[in-house]
Length: 280
Image (cartoon, rainbow, N blue to C red; front, side, top):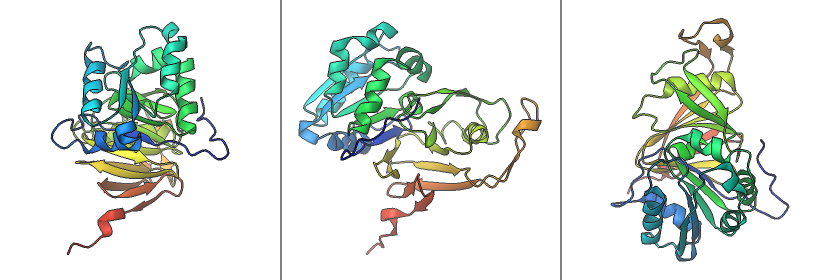
């Protein structure tokens, strides 16, 4: 699937992958910023808890977003692919200012929602200005290329990652979440060896990439984002080794970004952003 075309005169909504375990009570910078983007006290948000097997996930995020000031929050779940064509659920998503995918298992999202009217509607609404955020598994599904599963470790190894189609809001990046906490540099770089076009975005916990309509990524939260740019890849040994063997990759460009720093997904240029402001 391809990202929906932004109509003339429209501005695409933000795409906001979150690395998981985002702060929800003491200083919820990420979730508060999402609510503000969606309209603050007028925000209308739909929570999609499909990734989670826990019965209270949707209700929990409903409460969190209401406490952060959103006007209307509704959890909409899907138990079968047939549910994804149900008009009342589609209508509820169609009028929302923002959609939020919870964590869990990203394959539950793609196998239930992928290729359905819900997936198409979310892409179309994002192209018309609706903001779409997801945490953990909900972050992994946002792009066209999705890491479905993989092994921990700092080095890329053949066979260490499994890829599948995501929901396709963008084709510019591949997400990996819980990045530093679960030692996932190896599987992200292995994924990029398959597709050097995409930018690898490794999200620490309680850290988000707020990706605006100009394709500029800005970091929010308490951790870091590891950006791996493989566009200048000079050599990869992936096609000549066996599963389990380390992959030789030459020409990767890596940036470590923290809150306030930016990366333009179009120009592939990183900036210290607001970090350039000198302390008085």
